Image (cartoon, rainbow, N blue to C red; front, side, top):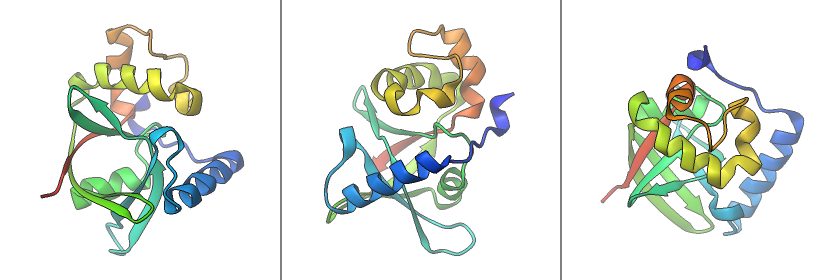
Length: 149
C-alpha cells in the first residue's frame, strides 16, 4: 500500500528542485512555490526543499507528493518550520492532518499542481472519487500550517 511511500527524486527532479531553490532564494516562487526550511531531527541543522503551499477555506497546507520523505519526518519532529521566498521568512507551526480529512485537500492540490506532481499519484487525479482519495491518503502526508505569532 502507499503507507510507506517514499519516492526518491530522479535526476530531472533534482535539477528542477535546484532551480526552484535558486529562484526562491532570489525571491521568485514558481507558481506560488516556496522554500521550506525545517530543522533536521538528528542534526538540528536547517534543511530546505521546494514546496507548493495550498490554501483551502482560509487554512494553509503542505502536501508531501513523494510520501514519507525526510522533510516530512523532520516536520513531525520539529512541529513547524519556515517558508522562505527571497528575504521574506514566515515561521509556522504544523499539525499533521488525519487521513479522513485529506480527500478535499488532495483534490485541490492535484487541480493546482498536477502538472508538476501528478506522476507521483499513479492513476489518481483531481476527478477521482473521495473513496479513491481516501484509499491513497496514508501515502501522502499533509500538514496544516499556521503562522507562528
